[in-house]
Amino acid sequence: MLRLGSRSFGPGEFAVMAIVNRTPDSFFDRGATYATDAAFAAIDKAVAEGADLVDIGGVKAGYGEPVSETEELRRTVDFVAAIRARHPDLVISVDTYRSGVARQVAQAGADLINDTWAGADPDLVNAAAESGTGLVCSHVGGLSPRTDPHRMAYDDVVADVIRTTTALADRALAAGVRPDGILIDPTHDFGKNTLQSLELTRRLDELAATGWPVLVAVSNKDFIGETLDLPPGQRGNGTLAALSVSAWLGARVFRVHDVPAARQALDFIAVLRGTAQPAGTRRSLA
Image 1 (spheres, rainbow, N blue to C red):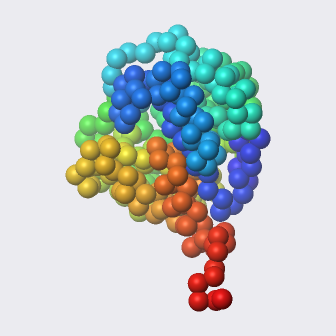
Image 2 (cartoon, one colour; image 1 turned 90 degrees about the vertical axis):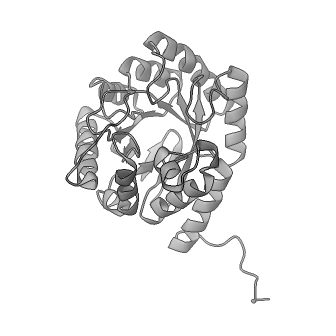
């Protein structure tokens, strides 16, 4: 059982995580939800479209202008508190690698700390344990935060991802993070080239077999763009294909830009896997 905030997600149940970036330089939306009003509207829309979680980020994942901890706090803390008041039952995740930010957003109402930089701040796991939030354990191949991969090499990228993420999950458990709040994320594109991210996708069942719930964040990623030779705004179909394969192979949580498309694709996969029923079966039966 996966428990995040007031929500519990049983085996075979898929959770959709909507992305709301409080950054002026996001690779995908180029700052479309940086302004507070636009961010509120994006949250409201995601909830109406069926999102189970929202993931709020105050720092662009890749390289770019430096963002101080003070500025990251300004972009996230009050916003998290306002969203908690606006949507009391919504699961709120915050994408941060800083323990100081993790502590303050947890106090403001965040339920999950999405650490996409694999414990670069060793105190972040303690922040999650102390606050009672969940924690995402990721793999970046040893890169420092906000650096892009260059000539990354692995004997077996999947084995490396499993070894790293499960070790971080075990460390989180030992630190006191709730066992039903820990997820692992192969972290496509972070510390990986396109071929390595594709290999992770086709072998995602090996990550699921670890027993830890798997989060995938493939939406509009560069490995999809390079595979199909498409820019970020035209990667929707490839994203749905990667999401569907990941769901079929056992992923549980899906970080996405297009909530309704993901929700429909995942609902269909759930029926194919036998964990849900069709909405209707009248054809040829009446």
